[in-house]
Image 1 (cartoon, rainbow, N blue to C red):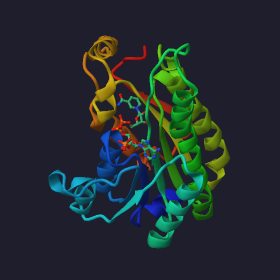
Image 2: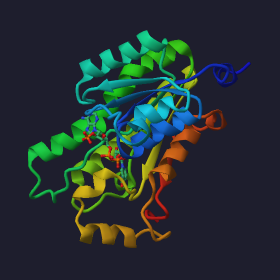
Image 3: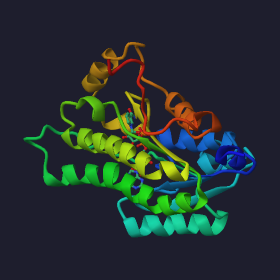
Length: 256
Ligand code: NAP
């Protein structure tokens, strides 16, 4: 019996960073739909007073367990303790999806050190901290799945985003290196690179910048969170067990 068919007999335990908003919230709900118990990690705990009880309520309504972990992916000590608490409660971590992210756009000649470090610390070091915390757990189990959310701007570079493009390119390098390191433990590691997706992160974008971005998209519209979430859910499922070290764009043709 292969590792994947063995695991499919039990409920998987997924950890989703940035899981209270946007793409992360959608991923958390889709993984619950697909049979996972889900730990939602975010700076702010997902409210239970939103429609349907918020993200935790919508996970529970699918008959799955939920764990909320409020904290900061920049803090490696806290991340390790959050993973420990998940292992204590559920016995392991089978799936990690790194969605937590920010941007602080500015051309490099106006970008201050804080804007650079803020983005690198969350978007790249945060991914490192979470991958590092779950790697021993997945190695010991001999099974796992990690999906890191990068961006097409990490592949092409974007004006005004030296910090974000560098961080997201770094995520792609980290993903490929980690795929090599964890393959012999039957842990797959992949990246998804979205284009423009309708989420709260876009609220700070100017109308001009938004129109310029939409004009690049072959399919003529921004993506929906489900467009990205379904790809992540696929990569976390049994049908994707022979895919690792891959970067998959979900961008309506924005990159080409
Ligand atoms: P979002 O709705 O703002 O979600 C990001 C989540 O990450 C928020 O809940 C945010 O919390 C959380 N977060 C930020 N800093 C954190 C930290 N230090 N520790 C823990 N959580 C933190 O944005 P999104 O669009 O869904 O973004 C999800 C991922 O997709 C990000 O990595 C983003 O770079 C990437 N992406 C998005 C797009 C797009 O067009 N939307 C395109 C390409 C890639 P707060 O809200 O409290 O800050």
